[in-house]
Amino acid sequence: MELHELMGKLHKLELVQQLAHRRGAQEHGLYFGQMPVLDFIAANPGCTQVQVADHLRVSPASIALSTKRLQKAGYLTKEVDAENLRCKRLYISEEGQRACAMCRERLDQIDAVAFQGFSEEELEVFSSFLDRVTLNMTGESENVVSGELFGHLCRELDAIEKEAKKS
Image: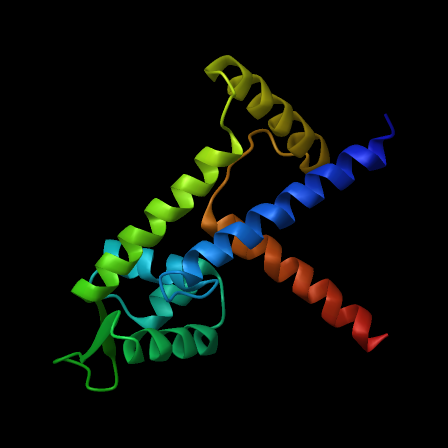
């Protein structure tokens, strides 16, 4: 098998998974990128938009727009900080907690479907193969997976695309 065919299969898998997850989130009134925002606010009640942006490594303007939409949908509340009237603290609402829980359950179901029929041993082998491919490409010593890292990689891709458009 040609290596570009394997990479094509990995890319297709990524796109199919993203599509399924986005559809799953939309079933619960959430758009791409809103789940990580809600997850962070749920884990850090009273945080600020700047803290969310720093954690997810996105622009404060992007978080401002997301939180405005989430507030309008009833998924979070903003409260003025008593010590700094220009600062707004973010809290997830009960409706936001319900939407997050239902969305997380749906995303977990999608993932379970993807790996149905695999034994635990097969999953471990598959995971080790993915780690090896990733480590070969990154030069890292460990294959760490996190929302922060994904945000960083997405911004790198965006920066390359912006630079290419300038040329």
